[in-house]
Length: 412
Image (tube, rainbow, N blue to C red; front, side):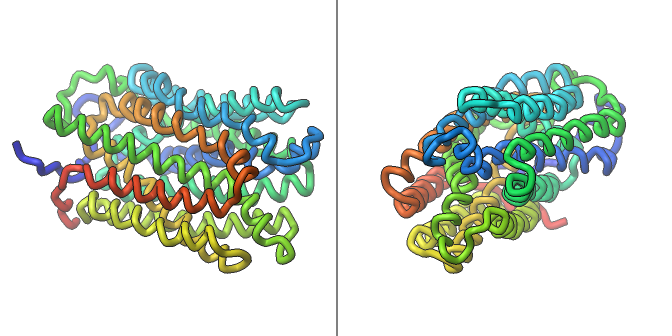
């Protein structure tokens, strides 16, 4: 049996669905990318505003409030499984409408919280609706893409600009209008996006999982199982790093910049700069995925995380800022690989379900990072946390080595 795997395939559903006779209109692609930005923005509002919320609720330390946010990330992972199933069997357009409108409602309810448990309930609801995007929005976006790597890269950029937006927008809203506005304003944006998406995205025809066309991607069972195992394990370790950093970076900069920068809005601006610079790596990586073998490219970027994490663990002030840029460039740059593996190994008819199952496991496990973040930092330090993350990166590299070798996609 050959161990060579095919290049990223040209996606198509034209044979079975008249709506798929051409790529999605640019307005639809734009709204799907904005959806990715909102998805990550909503999940990180709490981490950015946690200091102000803890003060409002009468808690002495922000670390004591962090565990109340774990429900959002747990549901973000667990909800991916039913979301993916509904995307394949009911329809991706319909699920994206639930995503936009559901996030808006959940944000408004969270803004009304009067104590930590009410806040936890609202955040958990946000996580449930946020779980829709990755198993539904991304498969919908790449469903017709001739160059999926580039499409995934741009989509990844959009998602991580949402991370930057959470740092910047939340910081300013908390300072000017209070922490509740940090949920209300994005909620209004999501509501407007739902209306626009309903108008610009036409019905998509038969749901992918009910299509009668023959599968476009068929791999030997052992090879498929191996690829799914690797992508799930790598996604777990990658999501741990993503959650530890994006949920802890605000407090890290606040602690390590003490005496240099004490303005929460300026801290948010610095983080927005870090995330924006890091997000650009996804466009580069997305284009490289279309042109180079996936395995060595992925492995190189994972290994590059280690020295940057060690440097961030040991520095303060502006050197920390430089190290954090390097850390986030490498972490964000690894994100497109998971979606690229889904496109590479899984047929579109079941792609949302497979993505949902993978996300349910990886994000469910990595949600522990949100619960552990406050207690770990309180008990030890950010230094210990970042050194531990360097160890996680080494584990990820060992997992990526298990991927089957692949041929380089043809240069186009």
